[in-house]
Length: 95
Image 1 (cartoon, rainbow, N blue to C red):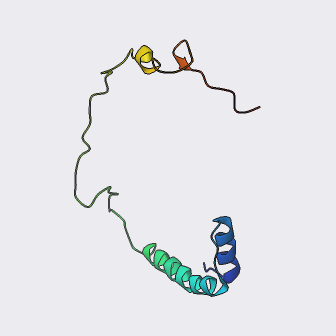
Image 2: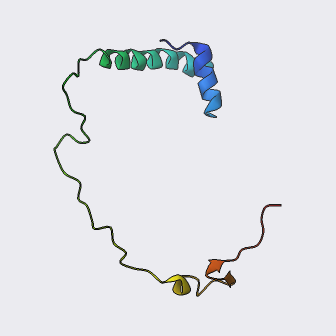
Image 3: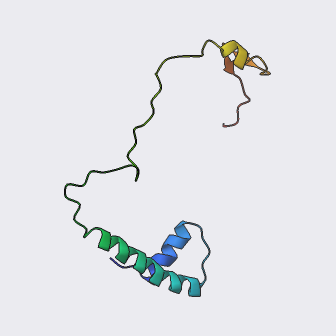
């Protein structure tokens, strides 16, 4: 796969990035270099290599999944200018 000038300009337009003609020409080479490197990575044999989330083996610290706080709805809406059954009431903004 390779990137051409039209692709660079299209991606820049979609990303709402203003690029000059010189910048776009330079990006063609840079993006093709990046794509070539990624294609080289796909050639590496990773048979038997387990996926990892970190370079250092570690276990995730877990917490108990228990409710430690609750029944605070009245406290949460106490300072609201308008509420209805513990829900905030706001002016309609969409018609």
